[in-house]
Image 1 (tube, rainbow, N blue to C red):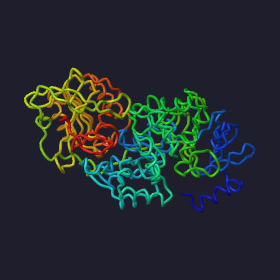
Image 2: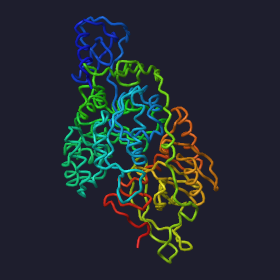
Image 3: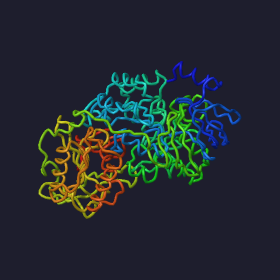
Image 4: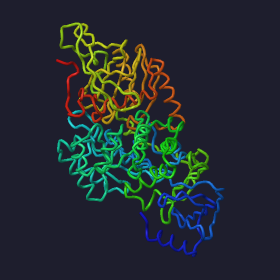
Length: 587
């Protein structure tokens, strides 16, 4: 928020009373407001841009010759979760800022489900030291599926209203359709309070079309980041919802959606980019929001329009265009210098008037904070876990039985419900490893119920061993997939012993582990260390036969009770669209 002193200082500097701090000389300005590119100088005082007039000559304490490079506004990620990167906000800086992202719109629902409002405050302690802007999409559903999962904390309407008053809070975080279509007053109160503050409500409309979508949109939902095809994209635009085109680790939607936009000659003004959930190693390898921009250009989107999608469209959507999203007078000086407008690879990144990255390296120190002990002590098993914990008793006396199986879709978080015949031995339903049908379980980790939800999944292609993770959306109980119950129990117990993380088990032993102590979700280490550890874990999963590029990310989404068609929680198998528990074995 601009102060009186800041406004006056900017005005008087523009009138020549004081020298500017920085002059960016000889740049090709990408003006996302006018849609033009022209050569000029950019004058900066403090955090803000004073002038972009090509005819003016103002004094400046420091001059930087940009040698004709393009000046582009800082990129904006419109929806993401820190916890999915496995990095603290401080450690993530070295990954996203050199790629040109200067604003992250973060829904902190993962840490909120684990540790509530206090968990949010822990993560926000670093906000003033970050070389990027952290804005908060206030978590609307903690828990995500009340009565169908166990969480560590609850954020009711009163807590959400209080958090919405925080300066960093810009919207109500993603709200799934069940809360609207089943007319749940608590969530309608959250929407009304948010709209009353002239802030927006983020959507999560996966799988909804027709009148259901119309009813959903009528409640005041502003956007959706769950589109996977043309029908979903055009239906959102038709009801006045913006579309956040997502490109994460297991949610690869950009090619399909941009392809639809190009093929159908749709406009770009109601589109934005987001990552949602993307591992840091993939960000380093291919890029962050700049990847979305570059890939769109490769697919035929004009560079100006692709950059607008990644900047001013997002700023306007969140009603922040008076502060960010463009290089124009009075706005915060978030500026990228790039040599090729068709390939956004910043040579310099400026955040609020300070140079924070050069040539793919963060140059501003941003050490990871000391996190309190209590946030590193969140995994508590109420009762012992052993191989018998994962038995599925068969109702039939026959040698086989029909079972609801979660069938994964490659590179997507959605799944289908497949009815398969599985063997029944000694009164138990068995796996079918040869046909890639494995046992899946979610173990309650807050010491409240001791519940273990058990089901079956197809898509991991494990031939031996087990994988476990303490991040399972959105409740974040321990999720485990395996080829045998002994390895599954070993993996779960190891997660509990180390207070959260990733585990690979084989022959009853832990072969690989990665500790995530902050809420059982994030590491205290720097980005390079975390990426190296994750590469080892992924390689260990491949050694067991798993062919997925991001197996632990895929594992974390299986339990999500708001992504069709099925989810698994500590309470059992969930039919997502009806929001009901269903049996694993068919009658």
